[in-house]
Amino acid sequence: MINLNRRRTLALAVGGTALATQLPAVLRAAERQAALRYPLRLSANENPWGPGPAARLALAAAIDDSCRYPMESSARLLAAIAAKENLSADNVAIGSGSAELLNVLATGWCARKRLVSAWPTFNQIHTMAASVGADIVHVPVDAALRHDLPALDAAVNGNTGIVYVCNPNNPTGTVVPAAALRDFCKSIGERALVVIDEAYLDFADPAATGSMVELVRSGANVVVLRTFSKLHGLAGLRVGYALARPDLIKKIRGPHLAIPNGAGLAAALASLGDQPFMQTTRETLLADRARITSACQALAIECTPSQGNFLFMKTGLSLEEFRNRMRAERIEVGRPFEPLLDWCRVTVGTTAETTAFITALQKIKETRA
Image 1 (cartoon, rainbow, N blue to C red):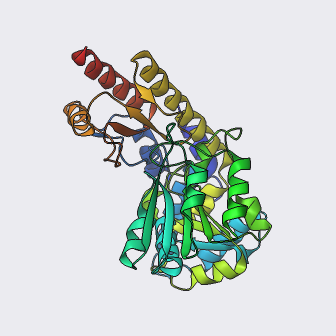
Image 2: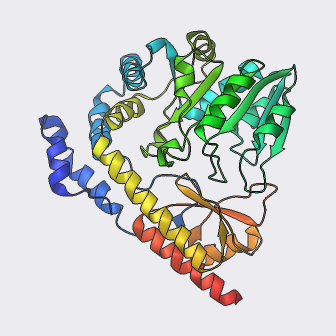
Image 3: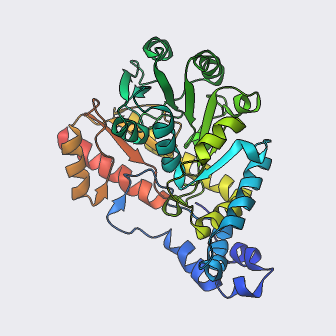
């Protein structure tokens, strides 16, 4: 279980009297994570452990600057991201979550052009692309619910604007091996822009896949997307970023739909440097993901080898029935993902929430036996 104890939080607070005055609120927020608050929300791939202590203190300190536009905060975060990724500031664009950046990419590259992606996958870019007249091509995942790279390649034509790859994929949790994805990006990049959504990469086994940021460093026709919504636990504060060649970043920055909020930028910057919290959070979530995987195996429930902070499982019920049965146990699970309507995506919650979910899953399985 994550150790958000008083001693550690106090240590983070040392260094400013103003921050120390916020300590009771930080402690209360951390302690609440150990309690079960029904209904349990295991439906949105949120990180129930975050924000971390450093981000919480940064949020409290940012209140006084809430009356200001966050230009300086944005510049500081941009510089920190560039340094972390061994890139120039010209290679980075910050957005109000990666969702805004997906919308910008759709409008900038897909108007009256083709968008190619696996299906099912995260559909944010599809929704915006459809609104600008894109020809959207859904390429079914393969029998193992992985991206079918040859089929994606075959779907690309001369009018293709973007090939979108969510890796790890939402909702299946499957990944493309790094070497295969790298070769795919290089090949497709000669014909269309490749967008690699790495929202869940922090939860992936490095031996299973890897980031495509090295292609950005080499000047490939690739955009890599990241977010502070998942491992960093800042989903409600809406901060994400894109990594790409300077010419692509200039085009992405042009039509921003919103100014990222200052409090979110401050929290993201603090969280970026909070390595102990991120490591402990990751370890805890992966341990609980493994517990759910083991429970599925014991109950003969098929599930994918997920590399995200969620699992995708075939429960033996229609999704609607499974969701209703989970609601009877005061647990919310994932929405439908066509065409796999007998599969369910379940977010990994806190350790206590994971135990409650496994208990409910066993109960539902027993009532059908």
